[in-house]
Image 1: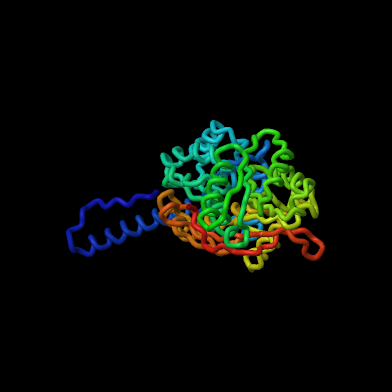
Image 2: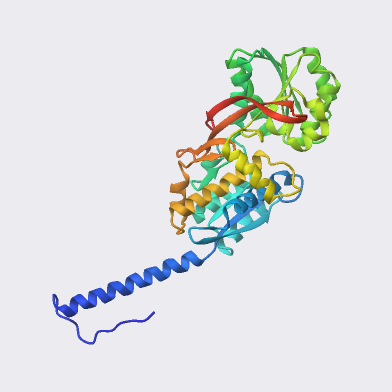
Amino acid sequence: MMQLTLKTKPKRGTFGAVLAAMLAAGLHLAAGQAQAQAQAQEPLRIGVIAALTGPFANTGKPFEDGIKTYLQQYGDQVAGRKIEIIYRDDGGTNVDQSKRAAQELITRDKVSFLIGFSLTPSAMAVAPIATQAKMPMIVMNAVTNGITAKSPYMVRTSMTMHQMTGPFGTWSAKNKIGKVYTLVSDYSTGLDAEANFSKEFSAGGGKIVGSARVPLANPDYSPFIQRIKDEKPDALFFFAPGVEDGIGLLKAFSDKGLGKAGIKFLGVGDMTSETPTLEALGERTLGAVTVLNYAPTLDNEANKSFLKAYAAANPGRPPATFVTVAAYDTMGMIYETVRKLNGAVSGDKAMQVLAGMKRDSPRGPISIDPATRDIVQNMYIREVKKVNGKLVNEPIGVLRDVRPN
């Protein structure tokens, strides 16, 4: 930078002193403008850590779809910064790979945000790295309660297990379901789902008449289904971690005649996913009732706009899911943050903007609780119905502004 040197020191209060001060101020302003311009021209990089391959790619791939949809709709520039997306695959369960990806994205790629995190172990592994680097990290899928407490730089845009299953228990008790049998996968999240549902269902006057737990690996649902049929509950509450489990359970549920015996199916939303569950089982799924924070059939302007943009950005891909929407909303929050900071993003400033943020989402109104940095949102009770000849998850009830725990 050019420097101005005065050979004689002007006397205080003289015209020369005033002129020197003006020149110095002008040079300082010019330097500041040059620095701001240089920052504005530097791309803003976003690192995505997700399961892009392997058994949990059904979360990572929708992340890509949601991000692509937002960029298609709103462009790849915000506040003078070009947006660059950098993907890193951790398979969903390889926590060492999650940590290594986070460290490389922060130190080598100079990202301004870390997003993704298909499963809870990945988010937990990266939390201390984000804290040390003061790096905003946005969880777009992991559902374990309370994980945002692991780092002051963590925000969640997906949901918690309690947001789904606790209020679902309350709703069930209020809607003429007196007796429920619970069946869940035998691991921590399955046990949480069972406990949350059972607690709120019982508090609402319902009765749990039996419970069973199935192994995660290669479960055979047939013996459990017969036992449930013999108990003659009003409904079965089911939770498992994958859509394949939903297909297997619902097939056995239908084939063993539980629906014809007057037993309702209750579960979390991805047990009746549009693809592949409804496509694979067809009318066997009719009447199944699930709870989730999204349904493609939601009638609001944000969802209509999103679905149109999704179709244009992702030709040939399966229908959008709640995971796609979480990624889409995450990009919207990042863009809003960058705009409010005029492109000059730091970790602490970004967290100040993100905490308490409110947006209109395809899933309805959402906000980030400033105390926990977790998401507050609607939950939808959905029933599989045939509408215009097509099987859909039709909302039949809304649980508004449900807090994470």
